[in-house]
Amino acid sequence: MYVVGIDLGGTFFKIGLVEVENGKIVKKIEEKTLVEEGGEKVVERMAKTVQKLAKGYDILGVGIGSPGSIDHDRGIVRFSPNFPNWTDFELGSLLSRFLNKPVYVENDANAFVLGEKWFGAGRGYNHIVGITLGTGVGGGVISHGMLITGKDGIGAELGHVIIEPNGPQCGCGNYGCLEAFASATAIKRMALEGKKKFPESVIFNSENIDGKAVFDAAKAGDLLGQIIVERLVNALATGISNFIHIFNPEVVVIGGGISRAGEILFEPLKKKVEHLVMPTFKGTYSIFQSPLVEEAGILGAASVILQHTSYE
Amino acid sequence: MYVVGIDLGGTFFKIGLVEVENGKIVKKIEEKTLVEEGGEKVVERMAKTVQKLAKGYDILGVGIGSPGSIDHDRGIVRFSPNFPNWTDFELGSLLSRFLNKPVYVENDANAFVLGEKWFGAGRGYNHIVGITLGTGVGGGVISHGMLITGKDGIGAELGHVIIEPNGPQCGCGNYGCLEAFASATAIKRMALEGKKKFPESVIFNSENIDGKAVFDAAKAGDLLGQIIVERLVNALATGISNFIHIFNPEVVVIGGGISRAGEILFEPLKKKVEHLVMPTFKGTYSIFQSPLVEEAGILGAASVILQHTSYE
Image (tube, rainbow over the protein chains, first blue to last red):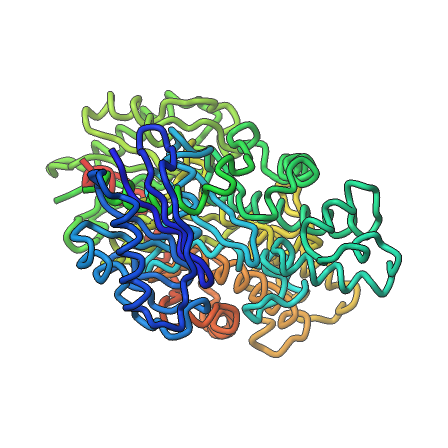
């Protein structure tokens, strides 16, 4: 069985033809989104690319993972900072009309956790908390086998759970959200703030002051690097411990660029979460780095159509 | 249609015969639990009381709300600080054998939110966050119509979500849990801590240093009373805002003894939550004081059987 997954971003979209049985991306194409062309044009190009990619294959349908606030029942992008002019844009039905195939749209962080359930660390599980550490911090939750999206489909905003009421300001305006500690944006902010006290940190020898520079510095024993990683780990562990107490999940899976830091992040993180959870919860969960890495976007999007179809 | 609800506590159990159509408690009996008699004896007395109460009525079954960790699939009290010797006690099947009726058992905070869904502020809603402010802080969540209990049925521990990592120590050993700010225990602790600086607070004229004394003092303009209420409100608002971002609920309903403080609690609480939620969430939720008051325990327990029956 084949499905198509579209990982839609503000700059590029990636379309992949996925063989469901083995989770393999048979073929994929990446194109510029060119939002400025207008939604209809973008969807038309998307449709052509899907047709090219799926030629000779009988596809079940198309799943889309999109940033922003998504009305997943109607396949509508309500609004997204990435697509400034797409207010209440009927992405799903438009693409469906071009392709004459079912199309389902989901928020990208929700698509991420679906991808983990269908193809990644969440296979075989019904209670999965997914967290993406990228420019922002996204969340997706599967509880009792069901995607938890809430009344309007805007729930699972795990990045905007407040971890420290007097913490640094978040992009959302609040103080001390998880995103204000555990996103690429937060890492960069903490590095720049640290320059005053640690101007000789090796972080500032890097071309880019980013997650990689900070984690590499920490690995090399750089004090500022270690301080930043510790702050990130403490906040993320508090968040994860909260989510474990709320959802009692089998699996917590962490993806996004920052998750690729690997052991320097996951080893202290697991230890700290273990310290924080109540005795009843010990041994009930596992924390994983997303195994899907570069393919998480397309496989997550492909899972959107699979999840919808398995419901019907 | 009639069901029986048993609100089981460490000191008393309350049994009520409930008319489902109008949520009326037709009759009720309160008895001492007498845990020291042993589980079997307690269940036998319970059964006799149910039979007496339900004589002449055809009851659908019995629901029990019990403190502690409950295996609701099997009706087992895994353990509870209130029943020190009831480890893996088969409460449900034992009572069911005595009565020859279906019996379902649920954690009391989960029963609370079910009660709100069937008979209280959550009627007609599918996304409800319930919080009980008593000796401790309990939580129950209905999302997409389903009680969220997690893999082992121990989820929705909303009282142990960390609100301030450097906050006061909670009974669970962690620091800064919601329970460490918003429970009767926390209020008493904050009052006693405040005595050093505010020895003349009217709180200390009360016979009992409890929630009522503190809220009454705050209403009368007492500074320590107001400081404690403000700390409680800030922590609770942060927690509720987090739960709104996670569950995107229609309704947040707050019960338990502390909730009866009324407007002095709810007015600043609603304002603070409104400040904290992200723009997308504004206007999506309502916050209510539980309308069930004294009857919340029995009606919640009665809802446990209704929820199970409506699933089947």
